[in-house]
Image (cartoon, rainbow, N blue to C red; front, side, top):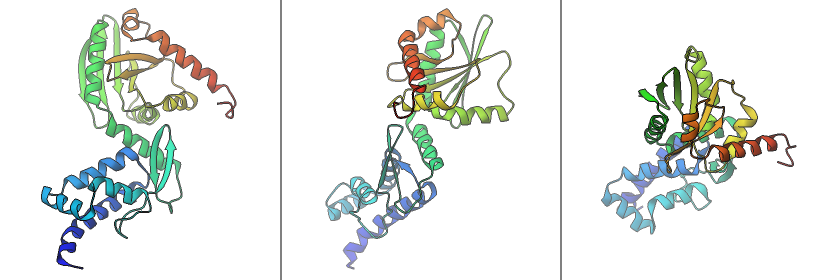
Length: 267
């Protein structure tokens, strides 16, 4: 190998080795997460090194690395292999061909994608504005590792809101919450989740995870700055008036509920 080839080959091998370690840890990655970790590795290079690599390989480095990982066109024998493509809940995921697919790992990958994608700080701004329009005083906003907690009150009504990155995280989070001492007495519990690319995560949640009657679930559309009901009745006319389109949202839930009762082959 010439000195020139060694100069650009060494950083490429470092990128592939780092990606291999990440993939070995998680096994299943969403397409968006894979692009994220590839770009993160490439951005660690100096501009000069990246330019030299792209000149030698004749293409965009992130695109070439992604193609090397997800197809049979390898940049190196050291390239990790994730060419098995899976569609899950409307998202694309990749896993190694030698790996025996495990449901738990794709669930974890879906949650990592939600944490990667959802701007919880922006979501808390949407909820704060929504609650204030409904006449509530937001007394506390606390940013946690994977969620935001918010307290709001109006006269004799007290709400405890948990802003989560996906509806799929509610069952796990609720179990953790109960293990830490449960829900706060005297406050209605509201889980607020963002919209998804497809309704599939909501349908699955409705099918598999029934909630107590006193727990509400709202859906926030961050782009539109809007909130709508998903599960439960807030029993507050001011909140109802501030929902973007509660009748349409509840109609959609009704359709999902009817579909839940159909045989799987019809659904």
